[in-house]
Length: 270
Image 1 (cartoon, rainbow, N blue to C red):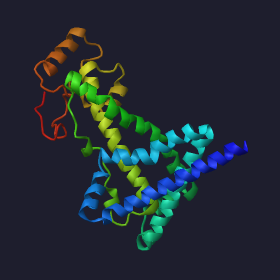
Image 2 (spheres, rainbow, N blue to C red):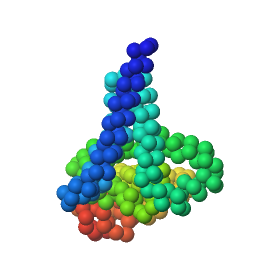
Image 3 (cartoon, helix red, strand yellow):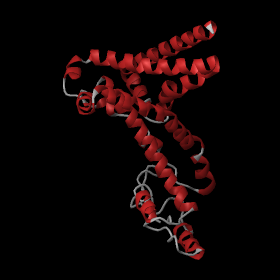
């Protein structure tokens, strides 16, 4: 047991140190002249951002169990939490004027209470593995659909990117969680966009529940703008497929008014 604990402490210490060193390096890069600024910008958008996010989120969750089992996993997670809290404190101290001014965290602490806000925001961190899986599917699964059935190819850097660090006086706690949301919403929105193509191509049939149709139409506009009625016939479904995809060059979902994100250009509506 003693050896397991020592191994966990070692893994946690190495993980924490590695995370803090790379975090410091990310702050240093933009100060290295024009090449550094260009590289820093590359790291803020996909695919560079995928490397950064993977290093800070997925890699510790993989290497921890590999080298220490469950104790290694726990030590790695604890190191990640400590890294965020240490960085948050140091970044706030480095920006005293912004730290003492109006802040998101101050208002929300007053609104729901400091501990409730603190626990709630950390609970959202449990969703990180979910978004990592979604991102992996975007990178490893969707390209095969582009190749096999001519789904639209997206410029993913227009979706998966972070830029809220540029917002004035956004520091410490506010900055790190806003960057998380910045990345998270881009990943989720791109995944939803890709899934629209899947649904309209393979299953253009409305759901048999009106409330579900209404709810899903927010993310899948084709529900009321092209999909067949739930009470319709298979002939109706096939006719829709012929009309929407029969002469289409790109088999994109067909309800969107403009396709500005597809290959960087607007494609014709189908």
